[in-house]
Each structure stands twice: as structure tokens, then as C-alpha cells.
Image (cartoon, rainbow, N blue to C red; front, side):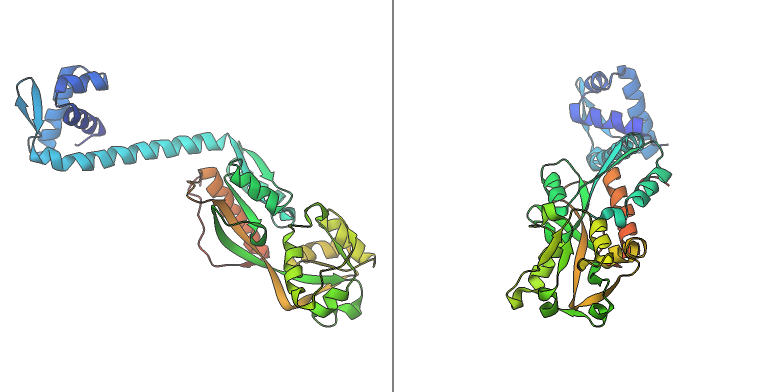
Length: 316
């Protein structure tokens, strides 16, 4: 039976042209290496080396065998490294970037998904805004993230869209929800908007600015807040209206503004969520796991985009 030990001895002998030198490299006694070469030759039924003076010369069969032996040992080494990576991963830290309101789409549920599979890991979900997280990716502080596409500079990044989420107009005034909201109506609305610290790069505001471009106006905000929850509460209190992702409206209105509702914009507007990482990066098992689980969570709420993404190959 051909063994990895035999292949190691074969390659060392082939490289050095000497059984003695091969034994020194491998840390074995020379007779042991000779025995492994003879056993390999017996298994294959052909000679692999010819003795010449104090050394050995590979036969044509040995020349043919060499690349195959190298591939076999390389594959075994990769398998060993993968196992060690997973072993380390199971007790290490998973750090993954997420867009600002990811807590409404994943958050605790995503962390629960991870811990149910790997109870020993430590989890960090990082990010208040997609632009901020994208910068963390560029600096190498994160391997991968789930971000709003419109907030990410694509240079040097691989961006894989996984879901799109419609933006909707929310209000406590039923008359404002009777028909879809046009750019003209939106330009006249009194709005409360969240993410005020990131207003210049906020993906929702960027989409609205594009929508209103033809009117020559920008969205007018009466109130600026940080949290989308606060914005929704203020809508429920009747102080202003807002534009939020539909998934956020579905989750927050019943709890924070039960008297409010939503209606589509005309034309319909969308945010697109995507897996983002540095171009050419080889993702770790931890990153691939988070991509798989985060994608599943996002697509359960937003509309899936049928683009193939990296799948995790770790764990049960």
C-alpha cells in the first residue's frame, strides 16, 4: 500500500540525489529511507532510482511520479492547515462588519446562529454605518462585511450583491399614504431622518437625492436623529414623516408607531445589500461562515438577489 511516508522519502531522495542526504533532511536513518523507497518500488512494480557512485539517479518513472507525489502531499498539507484553522476558529474571535441598521435584519439572531454552531467562539459585529465599515475593510481590520452598496467605493473591493430592500414612505397621516409618493411630493415633505452623523454618506439619503435630482431640490429634514427607532417614534407622534427600508418599517412600526403606515415611492427606490471584501482576499472559515449566515438572515427579510456568494465549509 502506497503511503505518505513513502512519498516524502521519495521526494527528498529525488531532490537531493542521495539517500543519505534525504535521510538527513527528514531526520531518519539512511536504512529507513532505503526501506521506504524499496517498498514504494515494490508497490508500483517499477524501479524509481538507479545507483550511480555514492548517489542515485531518478528513472523516467520517477520523473513522472514526482509532480503527482507533490500534489498529493500538498493536498494533505492543505487539509491539515484547514483542520487547524477550523480548530483555532472554534475557540477564537469572529469579527464581521455590518451596515448601520443591521440589528433589525440580523443582530442577535445572527450571533445566535453562530453560537449555536460554535459555542466556544467570541463574536464581534462591527459598524454604525456602511462607509465606516468599508474603511475598516480597506485598512485590513475586517475580512468581510455586509454593506449597503451605494455607500461603498468599489476600487480594490469585491462586491457581491445578495439582497435589495425597497425604501418606503412612512407617516401617521392616512391621507399621505393614499397614493405612492412622487419626487415632487417628497420634495415638499417635512421629514425626520436618522443617521445624522453620517448624513453626507447615508445610503438612504443618497437614493433620495438622486430621486429628487430632476426637481432641483434635496430632501428637506425637519428633524435629525441618530437612531432609526427614534425617527419612527417621532413619525408615530405626528411630528414628521420619514423614508426607511421596508424591512425596518415592518419591524418597527407595530412596536413604536402602531398608528402609522407606509406607502411606496414612485418610481420605487431600493437599497442593495452586498457582501464586500478586499479584491483577491482569501477568506478564512470564520469570514465565510459569517457571509453564509448573514446572507441567509438578510434574504429572509429583503428580496434576494440571485448572485452566487462564498459558502462556509466549516462545521456541521
